[in-house]
Image (tube, rainbow, N blue to C red; front, side):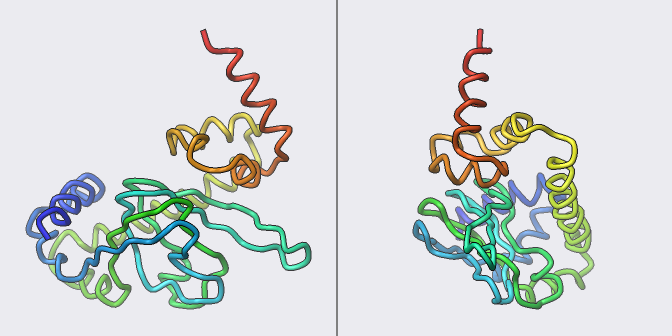
Length: 198
């Protein structure tokens, strides 16, 4: 419990300026969980009932193209980030995506009902709710704009900035899928960037 409280105090305090008392109020509702590599945090067509903080590991959010059955990676989430299918979570309707662990992972999660209760308390939790909604709106908008305004190389650099060492943690084809390119294009990007290093 002590370790979980320390993690929550740090991450929630930094994210939403929640006080130690705010975090203490929420402690009974957070659950620690281990998810082994390739297991799922949430499945397609299943309601996403939990919001999680990743303390260890890397996850991907992806969908399967209905005609080709090809998997398309949409987001990666790694340590010290929130993990959720947000529209499914806030509306409590079935998720359109799979959320899968790409490594053995550890999370701390809270249930939708418990979080809704915390939003009703006279604490910093209503502010947390606003900030988490803004965060995932920004994720969605940024992802859309990356494909409108950025080259594949720029998308690659942003991905690496958000998830350091990701290229050493998962197979290249997952990264290619996320960037919307094929593996040979990814190889050329990595080669070009390596040649630019002093």
